[in-house]
Length: 173
Image (cartoon, rainbow, N blue to C red; front, side):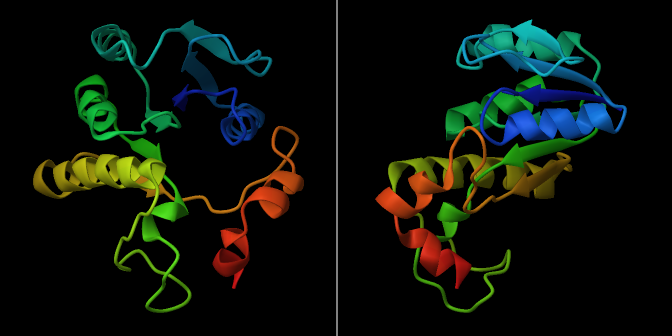
């Protein structure tokens, strides 16, 4: 497949790019080119997602089988995604488990759990997700939303999780 990763050099997306390449996919990373190099074998298209008109034009000019968007953080980003990805067969939106908040009605939390975002980050992600889901239901926009929880690795070690923020214990429970 021809896959575009919006981002591609961050904590989670670097691993995604490497796995896609190892599986034989053709990978393009769209990012500003300021946060390290893309994985060997991936193509870099430099651009800033926040420069919406250029971002949308650039993505519309390409032909991808899928886009994995690691940088859609707000409602405005999601609206831009709808314009940029109008001819993409499948879009994966990276959201966050924090959209569910920290109070749970049942465990394990399932996709139909009420959303209770507490922080500005999770509130913005919730708004972005809502736009994409609404257009998915109404018009068939082909989106899958991932909600990673506690993540760690070479770029962000476990110390970040256990030393400064403790809600990860509740999420694991």
